[in-house]
Length: 219
Image (tube, rainbow, N blue to C red; front, side, top):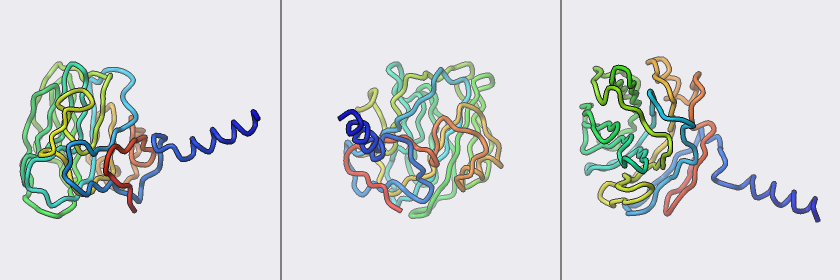
């Protein structure tokens, strides 16, 4: 019986979607506007972050506001947030405050973005489809908390919830990475093609996730 139990546990672990998987040739598809469907990232930093970088690829025809990456702590729901309020504009939040980056307006075009931040200077780096934008400043001296809920496709207005359908994402998300360091333009390009040289906190080639609601993993 002991051997059978071990085999059953191994079988369950093999198909546990919370276990990290290589998603290189896959995307998450969000087919509808909802107030609950999202992907929960089942990993987080082991300690508070004085520096970090987030990268991801999105494909949508939305023109209303939508959230791509929401990292909330119990003290701050917008600890890290990547939000697109309208075509041609991204907002990047750290500790509840944000800077805005203006990009070429496009609808139904795939967009790859990376955003980095360092506490010592407050400098924010932003890359759009591999090209660096002029750097800006935000929250110098702040530290990002480690006890986080990390959600793709919804904005958290409370720790792990408080979603609003009017800020939900519909479309396709992929190539999601997070590092506890800054990043160079060459490393942005590596992430865009899922060939990062730096080991991330989590990344698309070894992605730990749980789907909540109606989101599908598709080739």
